Image: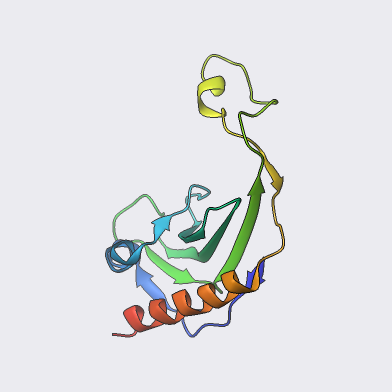
Length: 134
């Protein structure tokens, strides 16, 4: 993980309005969210490893799955995962889990972050700041 300094840290937004600003520029809501916190992800790279800029947020008024939820943004950071090829040897084999957990586990869940990914992450966050401050 590599943290990225940003002026967006601590900013507050209506979650729905924030989504409307971020999705058109390439962000998606990350899959690891709960009712009181989550993150927007922007994929930087997926060749041999995955690098994402992640912008965490926390609910300060309401639950994430309800209308009029206000969130506060945290410090953006870059995540890097290196995946093995093929199917996961340890995928669950239950009735439903085998169909859901068929992909490989990461070899390194928090691998080294290449300098070009850090540079790209800084550019991506600068663009994010521009979008959020206009």
